Image (tube, rainbow, N blue to C red):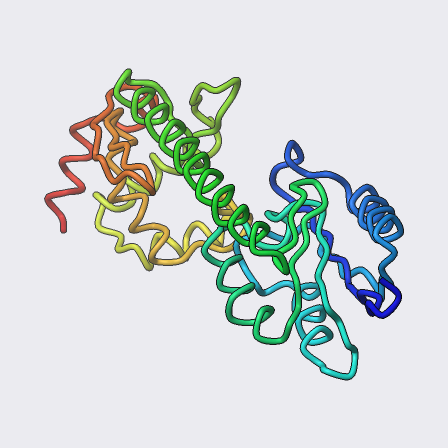
Amino acid sequence: MGNVTMKKVVGYARISSDSQIENTSIAEQVKKIEAYCISQGWELAGIFKDEGESGSTTERDGYRDMMQYVQQVENEVTGIVVVKADRIHRRLRNLILLIEDELEPKGIAFISVSENFDTSTPSGMMFLQMIGSFSEFERKTINERTKVGRIATAKGNKYAGGAPAYGYRVQNGVIIVDEQQAQTVKNIFQLYVEGNNPYKIACKLNQSGIPTKTGKAWTVVQVQNILNNETYTGFNMYNGLKERNGIRQKDVFPRIISRQLWNKARQIS
């Protein structure tokens, strides 16, 4: 065994900002990587880290620095060590591309501590593809379940999530009218049917110092969006970003303007 050269590896740790459930802290990951390298008798050249970064993108500073480092031949890196495969890539396809296209040709192994595989071994590579297809399947199942849940909520004529329009806010999962904003909505419709165009209305709102939902100045487009939003009459379409299903809901959003005023505004354009 004396002639086997000592493996020189780098570690990689990541936590995403969104979900704390599946995140082991960076410090925790670092500890596990260090302990594993000691147990294997490997030299750990350094650990690259990304905090609050999504694993579905490669636009991460730590990841980019690591890839640059391991690709420089003079650094003599023979492995990348992670606590769990999904720390480096959320998607199996991206992980396999990384291993097959970028690491294998340079003789760099991919090693996962908790999943106990090392791609420098044939069984490690096979195991990677196997668990990857399972985790991909699991992720799709979870996505499908939440999507079905949102549609069921919308079909049950209940609020199914998403940012409510100007004039409304969410309280305990229910949409309620924001009185101040609702008054502005009424004023916009009133001014419009009285012959003011959206540009004039935007100017009047800005002169009165009335802010938009984000606290900025009104624009023509924002005024037009309000005039075109049927939600204010108590009817709305639930058209989830992912599911484009166009479920028509009634009274999920309380009515702010009358149907007559809405129809009058329609006749102008």
